[in-house]
Image 1 (cartoon, helix red, strand yellow):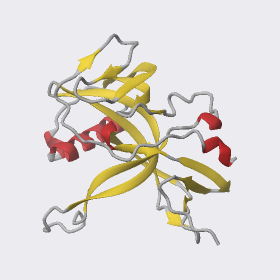
Image 2 (spheres, one colour; image 1 turned 90 degrees about the vertical axis):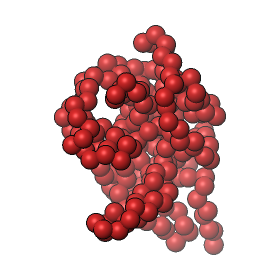
Image 3 (cartoon, one colour; image 1 turned 180 degrees about the vertical axis):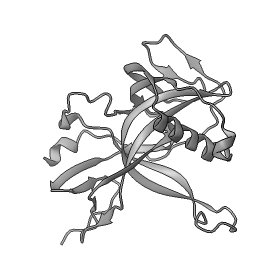
Length: 213
């Protein structure tokens, strides 16, 4: 079972940029911005987001633009879903959309993402103090969205809940949690989730330091 994760590829850093210049090919081809190396690849499909998904996109913009969610206004529900992301280093990261057959051997949509988190978010009067933290989840699908004539490459991610460490420093978790939207630039690398018992998944990540006895 462990060998199924040997094909996973990794890259170590992401470069978060303001995506102002873009280029868009025909509908059935890859989508990319002219000033970044990331590309979105088929499978693709036109899609109308649900009200819940629209709200999550608004939450993303509110955080990214430092606005109140009520200031975002009406956003389009019409999007183009994509199944694969090609990183700047050329690595392809999939999604559940691209893995319709449920082939676990080809599951490369489990990821680690690096996001900025306000350490003082629980303190209403405290100043904002951001730090970078790592989160694990699964890519549901990628999509292109437009707001105020600006296009963004985004992804819907279902996050895991409360990862813990085993005695040998291997991370594990029991449940999947909420979904949210992230910029594809925050996706750092592929990882593997291996279910070793009922509701117990270990995280196979080459950047984890495992201790052996």
